[in-house]
Image (cartoon, rainbow, N blue to C red; front, top):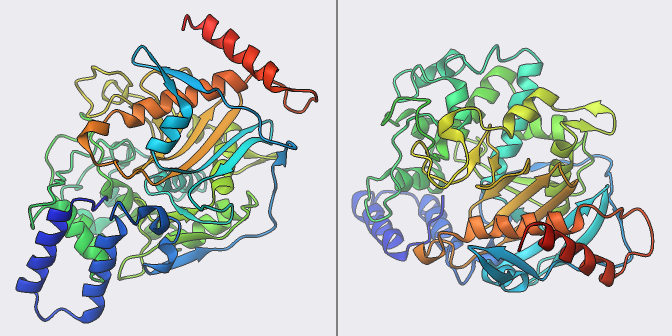
Length: 431
């Protein structure tokens, strides 16, 4: 969804003015807002104030549930290894434009820090981390008997897609970004899919109609190609089978049961449909609450919110083209993929939600660590930074291994203790 290439924005705006001179002022203003939203010099502020810039709904809170906290932050490992070289964590956090970092173990906040003017109450754009919230709603809908099987064709529940490339595609293949849908991201081409999608949002159009216009490029279930609109189609299905909006579902089934601390914000298109692929803005601690839910296999303080089997399947790649690895011919990415959740390229049972510009919920059941990170990575679209995601995940894995074996409910943990743990981990890994 990133609109960061100025040339593409300019060309598209010219196209709008030439072809659609009769467009109303409001749609043009909406497009201008969308274009400036991704200006690298403005994203730090924009990403924490998206609710003020686009039409949206609010996800209401109930009674908050709170993490415990230490009297002060613990020391994080200063060094991690990537590509055979030692790297500085502080430099990575700066390079990726980190605005918030939170580390939790045993329901206790070990580290919480905000950067670049961010505050704990800010609702930060999560972009594709939104997809993992939508996945949880699908698991609940299946448990409630509203969806018979993820091996059903999507058109069983969303018949208006029969004339599109989604006709006959299994829900499973859409969940795993293996729909085979053709989706181009050429910002200089006025007819490209990414520009048409952006137009649908910016000019008060319908993302449902946009999804129904797409065609098929590959046989579904054969290749892992990240197509964000797949998640919008899943959102359409949820609305059809429940008769409720995505905002209502999330509020009733996730937000209030988990005791989220702050209202969530969800961007909507011109027809009032939530941008399921990446429209949510959420506080850092509330991101970590979803991580806690998945760390405990969908159970929240004794109540099963999301089916345990769904959580397991969501974070476990289930076919060759979904497996992690740097040389998988069936995937466009080195990372593993489940049901709208990622696994690292080199996993050890850990998994994460990840959004553009480096928004992350990282969960490591082997150590009990949850890490939430918000960012405004100004160099995100620069090809020179294409390995930043992989490197960042390695850094998160290092934090998890270094801090994961400590009983933080105890007392007397000192920076020297943390240093010894880090040295032990590095020695054990031969680093």
